[in-house]
Each structure stands twice: as structure tokens, then as C-alpha cells.
Image (spheres, one colour):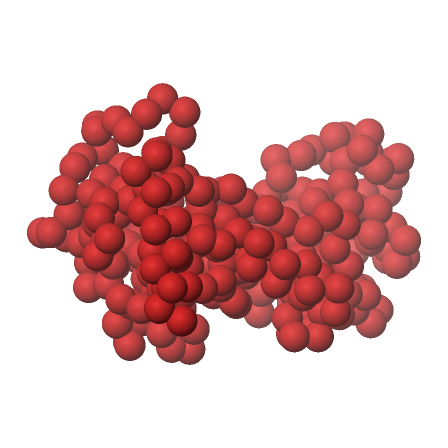
Length: 269
């Protein structure tokens, strides 16, 4: 959709996002203060929306910033939202680095909306050393690197359970963004065979609070849960698509193992 939809009219794009959000024109009217009749005119091309109206409609429809730019372009306006590399995000980049460093000795990484790795702390980089070279280009996709049976997949004890959870995450992200690359990723992950080395099943329970990823590693079996953080009120496309995933030990044995590893590395210089 990112490439194809940009060739559509602004009215077609508005209708696309309204239907994706499962809203009627009457629903949209109540959310935006724009009459249902005028919304119909916009969608059919009988009325041209102003910049202000596009912004109002996008806010009501929770359109990602990248796709808002597509609506502005389709309406004949210049894009509103810049897209800078992470290195040029100033205070936001500093915030990412602070979170990642402050989360040691537990793994943490910043990813984009496709789960492509942007940067990671030392603890996460240590876990990713086992990812084969072919999964590192053009950049590591954290879901593919974790679940592929030729990557880290065989180390996951509760593979089926974790893959089921991951598929739900991809579906939610696909629903929000409409990115066809996520549709491809979803089909790929759903098609992975369960690795011969993976143990456990979808029915296995590791607690009643949340599903952890249970991973066999060189320092023992680790049970990790995660927290997802995003930036509030982003105005840049890159920042809108960044998420920081911070992993936490789901049990005392995992906490002790991660702390001990970090202490050994410090002692070794």
C-alpha cells in the first residue's frame, strides 16, 4: 500500500482508511465535526480537502505519519512530516540511548514498525551474536531472527506458544499501518515449521500473568517478558515508527543469570 496507495486520489485514501478503521461516514462526522455529506464529497472527489481538514481526518482515523504524507501529496500539498535517520533525531536519539543503557544488564532494543533493528544495548547484542549472517542484511528483523528455524528458533522452548503471540502482534501492527511488508512477514512467520530442537507446546503454561519467551542459552534457560515503549506526540516519520522493547526477567533464576553474566564481563575488563 505504501507505494501503490500514494498514486490514489486523496478521496480514495480517505475512504481506504475510514474502512480500515471500520468507521461509517456518520461515525467520521461525529469525530471530526465535518458533515457526512461533505465527507462523501471528499471521498468521491467532488470536494477538495484543505490541509487543515486532512489533518483533522487523519487524527480521527489514527493514520500513521508516513501515510499522512501520502494524503497530503495526493491532495496536491507538500508532505508535512519529515523522515530523519535515527542519528539525526537529537533529543529523541539521546532518549533512546538512555533507555537502552539504563536497562543493562537486561536486553533492550529499538526497532521500527517492521521490527527491523535500529540499535540495541550490550545485553541484547550479546543474544544476537548467534544470528546467522544471512539474517543480518540489510538489517536484522527481530521477529525473523528470533523465530526462523535456521536462526534462534530452535532455542525457544515454548516455540509454538511464542509464535502464536508473535503472529497476533504482527496482525495488530498490520491492521494499524496497512504496510504490505508486514503482510509478507505475517505469512512468512505463520509458515515456519516448528524447529526439531524446539521443545514445549502452545498449551504449556509458564505463569498466569503473561507469556514469556523461554530461551535456551549458554548461561542456562532464560524466561523473558517484555515492555513496549513508544514516543508520545511524534512529528517525524521515523520517530512515529520507533518502538523500544525492553526485556525483563520473568523469574528469579533469569534475573540472577543475567546479573551474573554482566558482573563477569565487568570483572574480565
